[in-house]
Length: 80
Image (cartoon, rainbow, N blue to C red; front, side, top):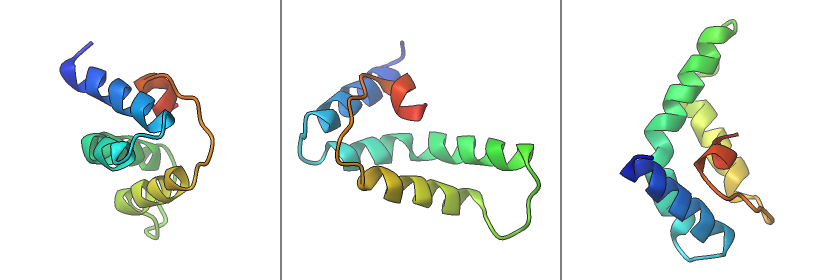
């Protein structure tokens, strides 16, 4: 496991435990990975020109920010 993977896991767990600022630090760390995932998803489907990677990542951010209960134990669960 890379240092980055370990830090993502640590931040996911810290966020799950309600640590202040953990969600924001997590988003900073995974932003580029989320954009790559969004780009891949758009490549799999038909692009209509309305949605782009930034829109998808920001939508994911808004949904995650609104989650009240979670029990993610690591990076794989978070991205899943």
